Image 1 (tube, rainbow, N blue to C red):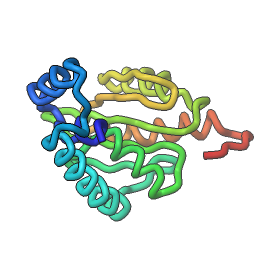
Image 2 (cartoon, rainbow, N blue to C red):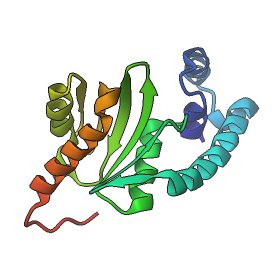
Image 3 (cartoon, helix red, strand yellow):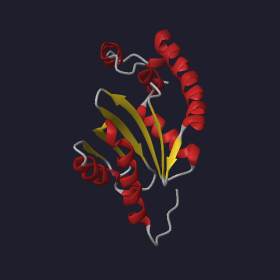
Image 4 (cartoon, rainbow, N blue to C red):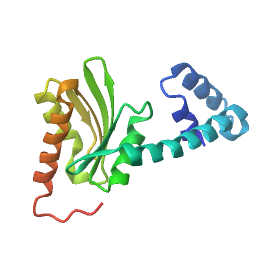
Length: 165
């Protein structure tokens, strides 16, 4: 309930601060009708978006990606990966002259954080995060190249190894 309600707030930091204040007063999320309605609404949106992602996701080797869906980048990455049954999912959005993205994998040894730091850095962007969840920003014109290089890094990491996901 709480996760869905928070997700529905997107970048509305005032709403998130209001929720934090409410919870800090030892109130239950389920006791606030507004929180419950937000959670239900977001759950409906999430199911609709899952279907959109299944239809819209594109594949570059071991990577499935969606771009500019106007929804959670992290969840988009998770659903894209699952929909296309690949190793890595990417949820991305265009912003001015660059693309911001969130990457997800269930395979820790892919070390997404190290890969995005190195690849995005070479392209004049930035990246970081964790082994299974990372974020990156690259110049818009280099987004596809980023995906291709990331796929090459995945191939090199998994060559001659059994990978379950």
